[in-house]
Image (tube, rainbow, N blue to C red):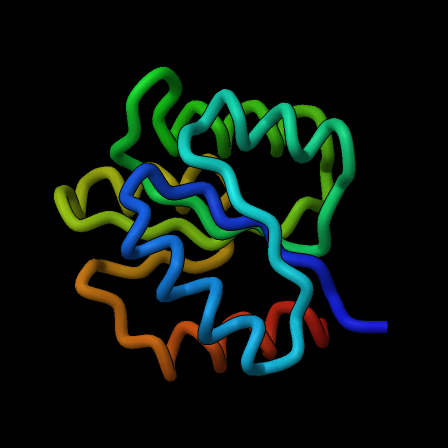
Length: 119
């Protein structure tokens, strides 16, 4: 059975692009357009991996990472940001396993996803 990945990203074009790459690689993908929606989705149906943006309305990625890692000890999270490398550092401290700056290198992202899901 293929792994399920939740993409939390407020920019639809980025979300669509990442979803396409992951679906082409055989993963099941669900989406959320902000942090609050992402948390609700995760609670309704936990996934194998979360990819979250950091800069979002309603609830930012750092808040999402903090909430998920407090509640689910083994949650796997990859954080991405087009804005701040400081926030990417904070994301790591809060429990993100990997961080990516935007624009994304989709091949590297895919390799990282594959690596995380195998370990």
